[in-house]
Image 1: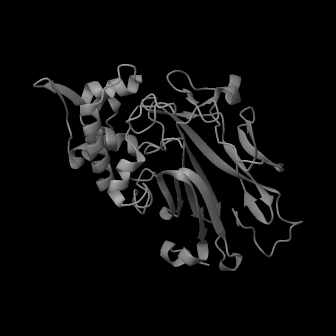
Image 2: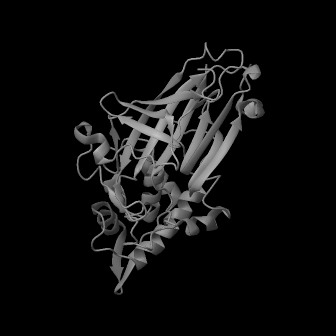
Image 3: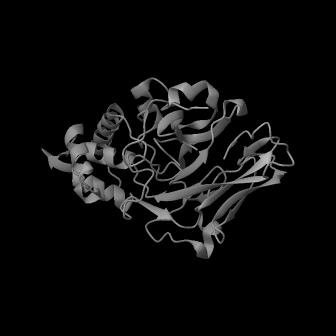
Length: 332
Protein backbone atom coordinates (compact mmCIF):
# COMPACT_ATOMS: atom_id res chain seq x y z
CA UNK A 1 0.00 0.00 0.00
CA UNK A 2 1.44 3.33 -0.95
CA UNK A 3 2.23 5.87 1.72
CA UNK A 4 -0.17 8.79 1.75
CA UNK A 5 0.59 12.37 2.62
CA UNK A 6 -1.53 15.34 3.52
CA UNK A 7 -2.54 15.75 -0.06
CA UNK A 8 -1.37 13.61 -2.93
CA UNK A 9 -2.76 13.62 -6.43
CA UNK A 10 -6.21 14.88 -7.21
CA UNK A 11 -7.52 17.62 -4.98
CA UNK A 12 -11.02 18.65 -5.98
CA UNK A 13 -13.32 21.47 -5.00
CA UNK A 14 -16.74 21.92 -6.56
CA UNK A 15 -18.42 25.28 -6.18
CA UNK A 16 -22.08 25.11 -7.13
CA UNK A 17 -24.67 27.86 -7.13
CA UNK A 18 -28.40 27.36 -7.27
CA UNK A 19 -30.04 28.95 -10.29
CA UNK A 20 -28.58 22.22 -14.80
CA UNK A 21 -31.07 20.32 -12.95
CA UNK A 22 -29.70 16.89 -12.24
CA UNK A 23 -25.92 17.13 -12.15
CA UNK A 24 -25.98 13.61 -10.81
CA UNK A 25 -29.59 12.47 -10.85
CA UNK A 26 -31.72 13.78 -13.68
CA UNK A 27 -35.18 15.29 -13.33
CA UNK A 28 -37.55 12.37 -12.86
CA UNK A 29 -40.18 14.20 -14.93
CA UNK A 30 -37.93 14.15 -18.00
CA UNK A 31 -38.04 10.97 -20.04
CA UNK A 32 -34.85 9.15 -20.99
CA UNK A 33 -35.43 10.16 -24.61
CA UNK A 34 -35.74 13.85 -23.67
CA UNK A 35 -32.79 14.01 -21.26
CA UNK A 36 -29.50 15.25 -22.70
CA UNK A 37 -27.01 12.42 -23.06
CA UNK A 38 -24.17 14.47 -21.63
CA UNK A 39 -23.56 17.37 -19.29
CA UNK A 40 -20.53 19.63 -19.71
CA UNK A 41 -18.97 20.95 -16.51
CA UNK A 42 -16.45 23.83 -16.60
CA UNK A 43 -13.20 22.93 -14.82
CA UNK A 44 -9.82 24.45 -14.01
CA UNK A 45 -6.78 22.27 -13.28
CA UNK A 46 -3.70 23.50 -11.42
CA UNK A 47 -0.33 21.78 -11.42
CA UNK A 48 1.66 21.91 -8.18
CA UNK A 49 5.32 21.65 -7.27
CA UNK A 50 6.42 18.75 -5.10
CA UNK A 51 8.01 19.92 -1.86
CA UNK A 52 9.08 16.76 0.06
CA UNK A 53 6.79 18.03 2.82
CA UNK A 54 3.06 18.17 2.17
CA UNK A 55 3.42 16.18 -1.05
CA UNK A 56 5.32 12.94 -1.52
CA UNK A 57 8.49 13.27 -3.50
CA UNK A 58 7.97 9.87 -5.10
CA UNK A 59 6.22 6.56 -4.48
CA UNK A 60 9.35 4.47 -4.36
CA UNK A 61 10.17 5.21 -0.72
CA UNK A 62 13.11 7.44 -1.61
CA UNK A 63 11.86 9.80 1.05
CA UNK A 64 10.02 7.72 3.62
CA UNK A 65 9.61 10.24 6.45
CA UNK A 66 7.36 12.83 4.81
CA UNK A 67 4.56 14.38 6.83
CA UNK A 68 2.25 11.42 6.79
CA UNK A 69 -1.39 10.60 7.14
CA UNK A 70 -0.75 9.15 10.58
CA UNK A 71 0.60 12.48 11.84
CA UNK A 72 -2.47 14.40 10.73
CA UNK A 73 -4.70 11.75 12.31
CA UNK A 74 -3.62 13.15 15.68
CA UNK A 75 -5.31 16.43 14.81
CA UNK A 76 -8.89 15.25 14.51
CA UNK A 77 -8.81 11.66 15.73
CA UNK A 78 -9.64 10.34 12.27
CA UNK A 79 -7.78 9.63 9.05
CA UNK A 80 -7.20 13.23 8.05
CA UNK A 81 -10.83 13.47 7.13
CA UNK A 82 -13.71 15.82 7.77
CA UNK A 83 -13.38 19.16 9.46
CA UNK A 84 -10.16 20.52 7.97
CA UNK A 85 -11.77 23.49 6.18
CA UNK A 86 -14.22 26.17 7.25
CA UNK A 87 -17.92 25.77 6.51
CA UNK A 88 -18.00 28.67 4.05
CA UNK A 89 -15.75 29.73 1.19
CA UNK A 90 -13.34 32.59 1.77
CA UNK A 91 -13.76 36.00 0.20
CA UNK A 92 -11.52 34.80 -2.64
CA UNK A 93 -13.97 31.98 -3.42
CA UNK A 94 -11.65 29.23 -2.16
CA UNK A 95 -11.82 26.80 0.79
CA UNK A 96 -10.13 28.10 3.95
CA UNK A 97 -8.22 25.71 6.18
CA UNK A 98 -9.02 26.11 9.86
CA UNK A 99 -6.54 27.81 12.15
CA UNK A 100 -5.99 24.66 14.23
CA UNK A 101 -5.17 22.72 11.07
CA UNK A 102 -2.60 25.27 9.92
CA UNK A 103 -1.05 25.37 13.38
CA UNK A 104 -0.85 21.58 13.57
CA UNK A 105 0.73 21.29 10.15
CA UNK A 106 3.19 24.07 11.05
CA UNK A 107 4.30 22.16 14.15
CA UNK A 108 4.84 19.05 12.03
CA UNK A 109 6.83 21.05 9.48
CA UNK A 110 9.01 22.40 12.30
CA UNK A 111 9.74 18.95 13.72
CA UNK A 112 10.34 17.56 10.26
CA UNK A 113 12.69 20.35 9.15
CA UNK A 114 14.74 20.16 12.34
CA UNK A 115 15.34 16.46 11.92
CA UNK A 116 15.48 15.98 8.16
CA UNK A 117 17.43 17.40 5.26
CA UNK A 118 17.47 15.96 1.75
CA UNK A 119 20.44 17.14 -0.28
CA UNK A 120 18.70 15.80 -3.38
CA UNK A 121 15.28 17.19 -2.53
CA UNK A 122 13.27 19.38 -4.85
CA UNK A 123 14.24 23.01 -5.43
CA UNK A 124 11.13 24.14 -3.54
CA UNK A 125 12.09 22.03 -0.54
CA UNK A 126 15.62 23.49 -0.49
CA UNK A 127 14.26 27.03 -0.80
CA UNK A 128 11.82 26.64 2.08
CA UNK A 129 14.44 24.88 4.20
CA UNK A 130 16.85 27.77 3.72
CA UNK A 131 14.24 30.42 4.52
CA UNK A 132 12.84 28.94 7.75
CA UNK A 133 15.83 27.21 9.38
CA UNK A 134 19.08 28.35 10.95
CA UNK A 135 21.95 26.75 12.81
CA UNK A 136 22.01 27.29 16.56
CA UNK A 137 24.59 25.53 18.76
CA UNK A 138 25.28 23.15 15.87
CA UNK A 139 21.63 22.19 15.70
CA UNK A 140 19.04 23.02 13.05
CA UNK A 141 16.27 25.22 14.41
CA UNK A 142 13.14 25.98 12.40
CA UNK A 143 11.15 29.12 13.22
CA UNK A 144 7.57 28.17 14.16
CA UNK A 145 5.86 31.56 13.77
CA UNK A 146 2.35 32.47 14.88
CA UNK A 147 -0.94 32.23 13.02
CA UNK A 148 -2.19 35.81 13.29
CA UNK A 149 1.05 37.35 12.02
CA UNK A 150 1.16 34.84 9.18
CA UNK A 151 -2.44 35.47 8.15
CA UNK A 152 -1.92 39.24 8.18
CA UNK A 153 1.16 38.87 5.98
CA UNK A 154 -0.56 36.80 3.30
CA UNK A 155 -3.73 38.86 3.44
CA UNK A 156 -1.53 41.67 2.15
CA UNK A 157 -0.31 39.59 -0.79
CA UNK A 158 2.89 37.97 0.48
CA UNK A 159 4.36 35.19 -1.63
CA UNK A 160 6.76 32.28 -1.38
CA UNK A 161 9.79 34.59 -1.03
CA UNK A 162 8.20 36.02 2.12
CA UNK A 163 7.97 32.67 3.90
CA UNK A 164 10.07 32.93 7.06
CA UNK A 165 8.45 30.40 9.37
CA UNK A 166 6.80 26.99 9.43
CA UNK A 167 3.46 28.73 10.01
CA UNK A 168 4.01 30.81 6.89
CA UNK A 169 4.62 27.76 4.75
CA UNK A 170 1.73 25.75 6.18
CA UNK A 171 -0.69 28.65 5.69
CA UNK A 172 0.55 29.55 2.21
CA UNK A 173 0.56 26.02 0.85
CA UNK A 174 -2.72 24.85 2.35
CA UNK A 175 -4.63 27.92 1.24
CA UNK A 176 -3.29 27.92 -2.32
CA UNK A 177 -4.39 24.50 -3.54
CA UNK A 178 -7.07 25.89 -5.86
CA UNK A 179 -5.47 28.93 -7.44
CA UNK A 180 -2.65 30.27 -9.56
CA UNK A 181 0.37 31.55 -7.61
CA UNK A 182 2.34 33.21 -10.42
CA UNK A 183 4.27 29.96 -10.88
CA UNK A 184 5.59 30.02 -7.31
CA UNK A 185 4.03 26.73 -6.15
CA UNK A 186 1.12 26.24 -8.58
CA UNK A 187 0.34 26.89 -12.22
CA UNK A 188 -2.98 26.88 -14.03
CA UNK A 189 -2.99 24.78 -17.17
CA UNK A 190 -5.09 25.74 -20.17
CA UNK A 191 -5.02 22.19 -21.51
CA UNK A 192 -8.57 21.53 -20.26
CA UNK A 193 -11.69 23.56 -19.68
CA UNK A 194 -14.49 20.95 -19.59
CA UNK A 195 -15.32 17.67 -17.87
CA UNK A 196 -18.09 15.65 -19.55
CA UNK A 197 -20.62 13.64 -17.55
CA UNK A 198 -22.57 10.92 -19.38
CA UNK A 199 -26.12 9.80 -18.70
CA UNK A 200 -25.73 6.20 -17.48
CA UNK A 201 -28.58 4.31 -15.78
CA UNK A 202 -30.51 7.52 -15.17
CA UNK A 203 -27.52 9.22 -13.54
CA UNK A 204 -25.00 11.68 -14.92
CA UNK A 205 -21.60 10.18 -14.21
CA UNK A 206 -17.89 10.62 -14.68
CA UNK A 207 -15.90 7.69 -13.34
CA UNK A 208 -12.55 6.01 -13.84
CA UNK A 209 -14.47 2.74 -13.84
CA UNK A 210 -14.65 3.58 -17.55
CA UNK A 211 -11.92 4.29 -20.05
CA UNK A 212 -10.98 7.96 -19.74
CA UNK A 213 -10.47 10.08 -22.83
CA UNK A 214 -8.07 12.99 -22.40
CA UNK A 215 -8.48 15.43 -25.29
CA UNK A 216 -6.36 18.55 -24.70
CA UNK A 217 -6.78 19.54 -28.34
CA UNK A 218 -10.46 20.20 -27.57
CA UNK A 219 -9.79 20.99 -23.88
CA UNK A 220 -12.10 18.12 -22.88
CA UNK A 221 -11.94 15.20 -20.44
CA UNK A 222 -14.59 12.55 -21.05
CA UNK A 223 -15.13 8.82 -20.66
CA UNK A 224 -15.97 5.94 -22.94
CA UNK A 225 -19.17 4.85 -21.21
CA UNK A 226 -19.32 1.77 -23.46
CA UNK A 227 -16.05 0.47 -22.07
CA UNK A 228 -16.46 -0.59 -18.44
CA UNK A 229 -13.03 -1.61 -17.20
CA UNK A 230 -12.28 -4.74 -15.21
CA UNK A 231 -10.43 -2.53 -12.75
CA UNK A 232 -10.48 1.23 -12.40
CA UNK A 233 -7.61 3.31 -13.69
CA UNK A 234 -6.07 6.39 -12.15
CA UNK A 235 -6.87 9.97 -13.13
CA UNK A 236 -3.75 11.56 -14.65
CA UNK A 237 -4.74 14.42 -16.98
CA UNK A 238 -1.34 16.13 -16.76
CA UNK A 239 0.90 13.21 -17.72
CA UNK A 240 3.34 14.06 -20.50
CA UNK A 241 2.16 11.21 -22.74
CA UNK A 242 -1.37 12.61 -22.38
CA UNK A 243 -0.71 16.29 -22.99
CA UNK A 244 2.05 15.77 -25.59
CA UNK A 245 2.52 18.97 -27.61
CA UNK A 246 -0.50 20.59 -25.93
CA UNK A 247 1.30 20.96 -22.61
CA UNK A 248 1.83 24.47 -21.24
CA UNK A 249 3.66 23.16 -18.17
CA UNK A 250 7.31 24.17 -18.34
CA UNK A 251 9.94 23.11 -15.80
CA UNK A 252 9.83 22.84 -12.87
CA UNK A 253 6.13 22.13 -13.45
CA UNK A 254 4.90 19.00 -15.18
CA UNK A 255 7.09 16.74 -13.04
CA UNK A 256 6.32 13.03 -13.06
CA UNK A 257 7.26 10.44 -10.48
CA UNK A 258 7.65 6.71 -10.71
CA UNK A 259 4.96 4.52 -9.19
CA UNK A 260 6.36 1.11 -8.39
CA UNK A 261 2.84 -0.33 -8.14
CA UNK A 262 1.81 0.18 -11.75
CA UNK A 263 5.43 0.68 -12.90
CA UNK A 264 4.66 3.97 -14.64
CA UNK A 265 5.53 7.64 -14.28
CA UNK A 266 2.68 10.02 -13.42
CA UNK A 267 2.11 13.64 -12.50
CA UNK A 268 0.34 13.27 -9.17
CA UNK A 269 0.52 16.83 -7.91
CA UNK A 270 -2.48 18.70 -9.22
CA UNK A 271 -5.83 20.05 -8.12
CA UNK A 272 -9.10 20.59 -9.95
CA UNK A 273 -11.86 23.12 -9.44
CA UNK A 274 -15.29 22.79 -11.04
CA UNK A 275 -18.21 25.21 -11.10
CA UNK A 276 -21.79 24.78 -12.24
CA UNK A 277 -25.35 25.89 -11.52
CA UNK A 278 -28.56 24.00 -10.85
CA UNK A 279 -32.18 24.85 -10.23
CA UNK A 280 -33.31 23.45 -6.89
CA UNK A 281 -36.64 21.62 -7.02
CA UNK A 282 -37.53 19.47 -4.06
CA UNK A 283 -39.50 17.09 -6.28
CA UNK A 284 -36.35 16.27 -8.29
CA UNK A 285 -34.80 14.60 -5.23
CA UNK A 286 -31.39 15.69 -6.47
CA UNK A 287 -28.33 13.76 -5.28
CA UNK A 288 -24.59 14.19 -5.66
CA UNK A 289 -22.23 11.22 -5.24
CA UNK A 290 -18.49 11.65 -5.07
CA UNK A 291 -15.66 9.14 -4.73
CA UNK A 292 -12.05 10.11 -4.33
CA UNK A 293 -8.85 9.21 -2.54
CA UNK A 294 -7.91 12.73 -1.41
CA UNK A 295 -9.52 16.08 -0.69
CA UNK A 296 -12.94 16.35 -2.28
CA UNK A 297 -15.11 19.29 -1.23
CA UNK A 298 -18.52 20.33 -2.51
CA UNK A 299 -19.80 23.83 -1.80
CA UNK A 300 -23.33 24.94 -2.65
CA UNK A 301 -24.00 28.68 -2.55
CA UNK A 302 -20.60 29.08 -0.85
CA UNK A 303 -21.52 26.69 1.98
CA UNK A 304 -19.78 23.38 2.60
CA UNK A 305 -22.26 20.66 1.63
CA UNK A 306 -20.04 17.59 1.34
CA UNK A 307 -16.64 17.01 2.92
CA UNK A 308 -14.35 14.15 1.88
CA UNK A 309 -11.25 16.05 2.89
CA UNK A 310 -7.73 15.08 3.79
CA UNK A 311 -5.54 12.21 2.64
CA UNK A 312 -7.18 8.80 2.56
CA UNK A 313 -7.81 5.80 0.40
CA UNK A 314 -10.83 5.86 -1.90
CA UNK A 315 -13.95 7.01 -0.07
CA UNK A 316 -17.47 7.64 -1.34
CA UNK A 317 -20.28 9.80 -0.01
CA UNK A 318 -23.72 10.73 -1.26
CA UNK A 319 -25.36 14.09 -0.67
CA UNK A 320 -29.15 14.20 -0.74
CA UNK A 321 -29.79 17.86 -1.43
CA UNK A 322 -33.27 17.78 0.12
CA UNK A 323 -31.76 16.70 3.43
CA UNK A 324 -29.49 19.73 3.62
CA UNK A 325 -31.67 22.26 1.77
CA UNK A 326 -32.72 24.10 4.93
CA UNK A 327 -29.15 24.24 6.25
CA UNK A 328 -27.92 25.61 2.91
CA UNK A 329 -30.78 28.08 2.61
CA UNK A 330 -32.15 26.54 -0.59
CA UNK A 331 -35.65 27.54 -1.64
CA UNK A 332 -37.90 25.36 -3.79
